[in-house]
Length: 356
Ligand code: PMP
Image (cartoon, rainbow, N blue to C red; front, top):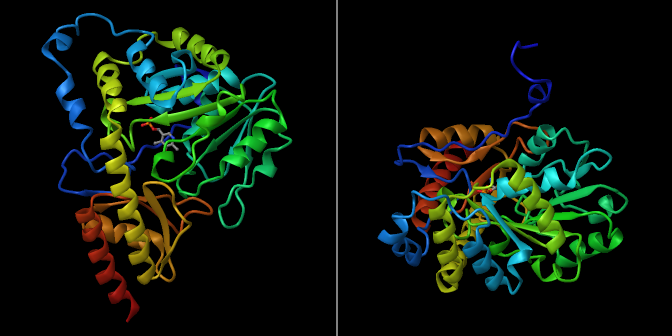
């Protein structure tokens, strides 16, 4: 036992982020960022006048950003809370909606930050295994009395759930909250947002880090009933009233108004993903049908860890976990056409040499 560490901190299970090499001569396909810059409107928006306001605290309520998000999704600003990345709003939700007598359930193969949160807040966690093919069956959660957290599409598999499944979960028990983490929904999933007005036990979490190309600004948000959002705000204002900096609030609001750019770049990523799927198949890879900006692929004969190492030596970064059930797969983020060409050319050569 350390002389200094608290017992609560001693039980932490810190999340391990993907590498962020500073030297950008790598082909970076390891953390599901967008390969494109943010909307040009974002880059124009930080005026001298606004830069001159940096001596003041940012708006603790994130009003401008919340209003822009609410307008985009046809809801009221009271239905929105924004934070420093969706990781932060997830943390607010975990703290607000799980605790003594109310545990949390999530899949065995999903975003590993949920486990870190459960450990941080000392929550009783129930891990629900995905089926053999990595599909999530909502029937496995029907009787769970606590808070349910589902990434849709899931990470790292990319598999999406129909909205009807989320609706069934919401209806099965109106007294428990279902939190849907839609970090990747803009690449082909079906959002649960249209259900927010009908179900006051639904929370939908989204991010600007993927489909809006703004991972570096750290913007995430959560949409739900006014009551639930109020609970999250109580946690936020007990933790740090000014979690979001001023530039993120201003630029986020501008980004969310540029739907034309948003639709164009997400369509490009989806088109590239579908092409990469076809080409990976011809090279002997299999994968679940991803609706996200990544593919979770395993090779019919070559162990994933070996491919991972070989790619790394070629300065191509993907993500690999040496963990049960997923150690034979690589998560490959969809980059630009050119980046994916570099990856595919390498793999073609590598696989052909390993076949003979
Ligand atoms: N949810 C999922 C499923 C993710 O993969 C990520 C990215 N690591 C996040 C949430 C957090 O994203 P951010 O904090 O950048 O909004």
